[in-house]
Length: 164
Length: 99
Image (cartoon, rainbow over all chains, first blue to last red; front, side, top):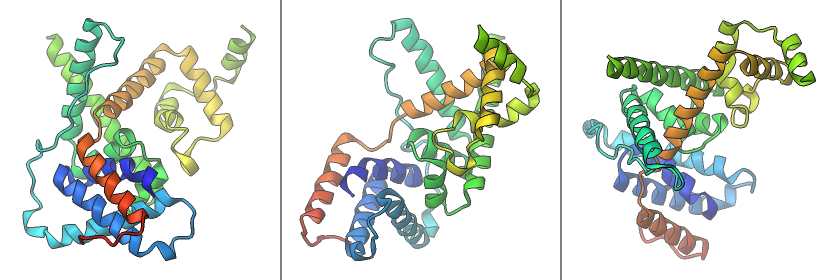
């Protein structure tokens, strides 16, 4: 269970987009897992924990329906610096590209943004993302591909605008 | 050289078809049951090696994925450390004092 905490933290942040809520969600998930440990069959701890996190998050969302609207900029991805050996010029190019990708990602609707965050940011497989989103694997794939295509189209449009 | 010849012979997929399969091809390691079968994946790979436009398209998607991956988790290292300590206390059998 413990090796999965970093993954749980990333997924929780993708679900909540809010650091304090994400931390609470991971804690609640761990407590629920701890209470249900006897029902765990010992296989695929990550999938088991993701299922618990999905259900825990659903309960939290239900309790909070009135204040679901969050500032979309809150908790937006903090861009890290480029790789250590990149040149200064590469870093600028990378950070501009990263900023454009982050902007395009934040411009997606929640379903599309979330699947990109779960797979490309958090590193989940299609099947793990399907578990946390409670949708079929095929739906994860189609949403993910459409979302990335939109990001790509947005990048192309941005590049063309900047080039004018 | 011979490999390149083979790729051309196997290069039976037109660009629009490769475009449709491209992300599945790139996601091979995470797609699980949705991954392309070996034959189709080899055809897509062969096409990408020979077709500049589709190759650039693949690079674009790889760059987007890498960029998203660089954006990090959003949780601070301190928060993760608190969660690890919390997890360890549970694993040690301590009754959770929250929830």
